[in-house]
Length: 405
Image (cartoon, rainbow, N blue to C red; front, side, top):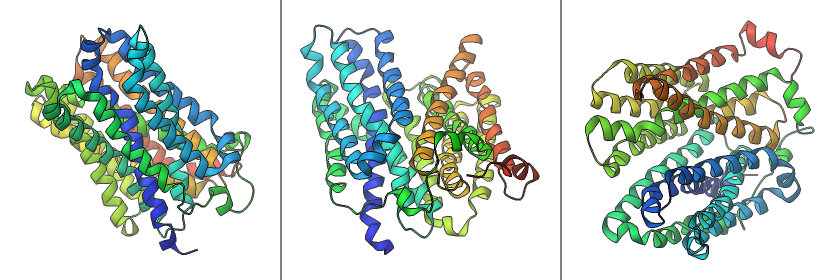
């Protein structure tokens, strides 16, 4: 099987992560509009985020048997269909119920199922393709989530500025074009099932849970998600409060800067990964992440703090795809189940990072620096786990000598 044959497959997977960015980042841009248009309290609006997160977690946990039965192709078609359905329903269901909240919640459920399947599938699809440098391909794959994030915020902001935020339903339909393109691609691109690419039987829950190296990877994934979202979720607020700009400008300066820097880091490793050892790149990134968090804590200048948010985005870029690659090479026959469980751990980290930061802020009278700074424990823990997972380390041999998959 030639590597060239699967170029379009890899591009379809890249587009899949753009779909994931639409699922996670489009609706939050409409929260203020929904509060105004539907007279909906913020307490209800925040449930949309919670519902999206919980459903994606459940899909991460429960989808593996279904994927194994119907295959990657049909699963990706279902994923994109759910996202398209959710976006279309978002434009019509709020008016179909006396309480618009119910209609929006149903829409969120549909596209969250699609987003969860997408997250579970795209990484093993790329991992199964016969590429020369899988670490670089994985990093480049995950950079497309960042580029999607940048595109969703930027293009939506431009649309709202010139077409009007009252026409957000039109934009929701326009965003359907991306998952529709991905659906079409996955109807014909060649796909290798990950299990068919590896010798022996794939791991079960029992086998994975007995493998102590797997639990190191789980901790690293939690730290990856928490290190990322611990800063990202509050970057716009930093820009708004620190620099005194509007929410729109805050989104552009905060979240877009973070996402752009994160995508740049992943793209750089995707291009030059053959010449850089993955763990060395991750260790340097861990140091930069701790430095960024330290600047946020101790430097009062809002401009420097905002730049530190960008540095944090650059430094965490390799954490998620890098951990996937280390797990794939270190756990024999992990298969789709391993990727699903690691995605679940990453999502738990994405929730725990900003939650911890928010809890500390509440205890310190809204001190954002201390709140975000407390989340420095996550990149520090990532560095410790990288050290432990070193194949030449005594600790690694002690942890894994009896439990290799």
